[in-house]
Image 1 (cartoon, one colour):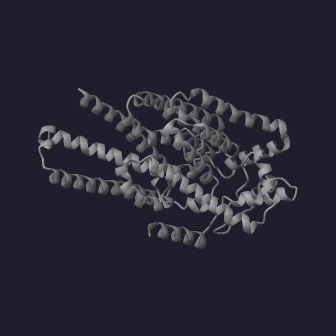
Image 2 (image 1 turned 30 degrees about the horizontal axis):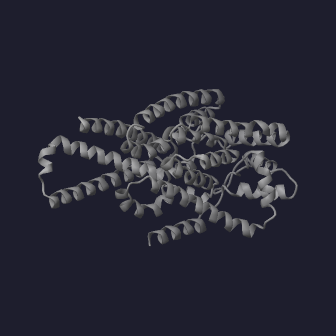
Length: 415
């Protein structure tokens, strides 16, 4: 019933409002390539014409240009062989499948106890990417497909340390979105002895970028021009620390490239050091590793130099799990401080069950209150970007705290 309600709601959003605006750039590029033209020229011309207009009518959407690498052009030529009435519904199904694969990966991070309540929230993750309300799902960005494949192949990785298909998926995804190469940090953080394999995959992905100007110099020049326009006219910087710095400098009409690059390098160095340090501590205990996986995924995506709306969609369930575990750990800490272990051990089983139920209810209410507060603040503030970054950083910090707190509790238990 809940899945049906969610599906009808998404369908209603698609019918009554803008729909698939991010996939239109691909359709335009497919048509252009199919007729022997350029995948980039049409979008660049449309965007420049839009920017040159003295004014814009209410509801006009800025043209979205094709900003994927020349390596994707052979795929566009293949797709140009099929009619639009077939490609449209087919791609919608593929995007939906990618979203479901993201949910499945998040569900696999949960414990059996957590799955009892998580199963009821999965259908509504579509409306709250990164725990904040947004209509990202109906944009049908290809990131839903890419993240779905990457996370689906990551499950055997963190469960059985089998990462081969994960590396293949990440390198393939980097052909479309180069920043996704930062996801290669994930197996290093949660796997065992993955430095060499991750480095080889990173070198392969980098090589795919380097060879393109040699093989397709004209197309690569247009590609770089399209990317440049995406920043200069669409200010598509993302909402990571480097993106916020770049966007602020852009609004001030000042050069942003060097400052944004320095900001990212400093951010990546600090965050990477923290992640590697935490990873070293959790390897010693399987109970900590269970807490670590969603935190590691969140930290890995925060390493992306250009975090966008679509990068938060695969984080919705991991964020929920981190928040729930932090609240539960905090409540257990308070409970232990009020009553010793000896007094709690002599309580009857029914009394313990009743108290556990009450604690769970309190946790649910606290979690729901935090969730509602973030969305209300976001609506009042009216700027999704800094609020989403604040949510990600806060939950990440709490997740790191929970790891070290749990490690201290395990040491105390052993003593």
